[in-house]
Length: 454
Image 1: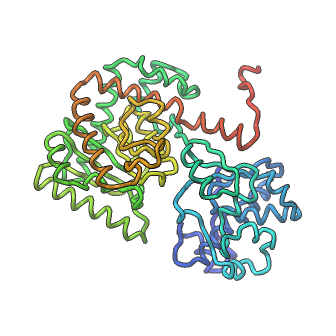
Image 2: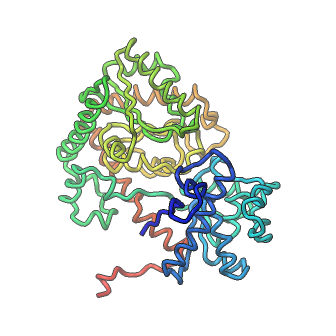
Image 3: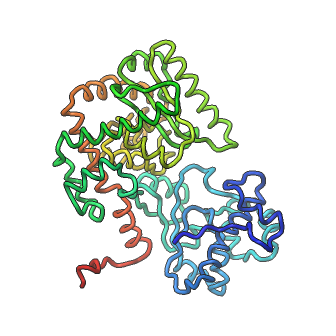
């Protein structure tokens, strides 16, 4: 079960009732600390109140819940080693801003005398209270969420042993209806045994084509009802949907906009979706730049660029199944994992991505599942890994013009690549991911499924 915590309950003072009213409350660092106390300390207390008295592992995701350690420290009578035995910690971002730090005097003000000195020392980061330090220091197991992210995390936090478990997506949830039907006809047990998808090459070409066209038609039909700039079902549709954080470089595609216009004219169209943090001015500027670039491309080349509003999970479902190509252009080694490309691959969408996060692994597994923008991480001195916009945009344009366009025109080759994309879902799924967490983070031994034991 999932328990959602709120302070908007009878008996709380007005200021406290509002404390959980807004996620990512940036009005004050004081509020942020209180929210994280509610999550960490309140979360542990809630589980205890609900009767969960024999918890073997508390799994913390990011440092936001690390105040749980304060409550566990009290429960274990100040025994640090006993706390460590109970905790696994996963870090999800290599971006420094994603790791909360608070001034020590503010911690004193909020906690008064309730913050144990020993716990405070473990969280010390050059005079500040580092929530990630606290989570890692009091955990028996720590991991990043992709192989490269594990490497980067070990460099960021060299004082700790850090493993990696690459993320995955829940296939039954993210598969589109046409693909679900197609998979179920071919492999009735694929939902519980996703490794069957590694045999995607066996899918009938016409079945795959029909399923994809149905998804593409559904997406474009929806788009036509929500935008004045109507997309064309006959053109190659390239999708980009995610948070508009600056490191994700949503506007790299437009770096040489006239070159893009000449390549795309009459052949490519683009659909964007996503949101920026309400206080992220630079993120909002990216959305503005996409609109401006779209107007320029349409006025000068009749190339359509659509920015879909009200991005949510339903729209995400349509995008990761209805486009032809999934685009991802982050600064290298800033994307911990990324999962949208996994969802797209499951639905036969080809990825075009910088080699970072999951795609650094996925492209090495199967180079027919898409294309890589620039080099991998094997040579750190390669100028291509410098996140140079000229180098990366040139590589992207080369892929669009010399790889994607001719491959799409070869109907059989495109479908063959779609099958290779689907095969990646045999690995990048939550079945495999949860098995790794069970074995590595939770110390659970593999057991035969109950139906076989019976």
